[in-house]
Length: 170
Image 1: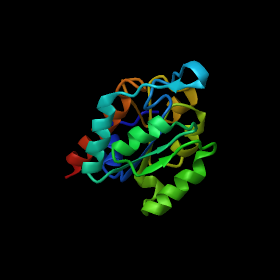
Image 2: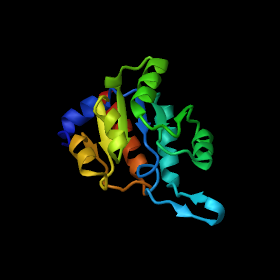
Image 3: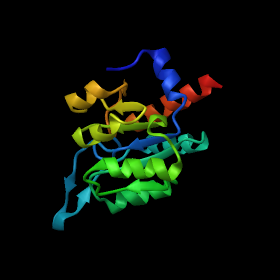
Image 4: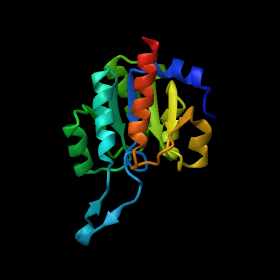
């Protein structure tokens, strides 16, 4: 259930790591299938600037995704993301490893997801974020829900919220 604004700002201001899912969060969740099994996905360019702004604020963005995608990985690398986990079935070990590598407590991490595999780590994170068209279980676990859908600026909206909270705490 979404948090009250003051409580959200307080929690969000302490976030050091933000983990995003890809399909349904960074993309609209649809796969466009081309000849010979080629897959195409779309990502919103504004999300990229949001990720860059997070990095500039000292907040580490990361990705843990259930599906492999070389083009998505290339895009994330171009945006400066250093922690990208693709083709992960169980996201819990990757999340634990990431927190340990960065020396960040899970309570200082936010996770943005849309489906059941994301729920595994949303429940352990300090702040659970969701897109509005997420499955019911994810929406029920979310502390904050974006107004924009995945692939349509939801990531940027989450980044802006976290940056605003950090600035308000200064």
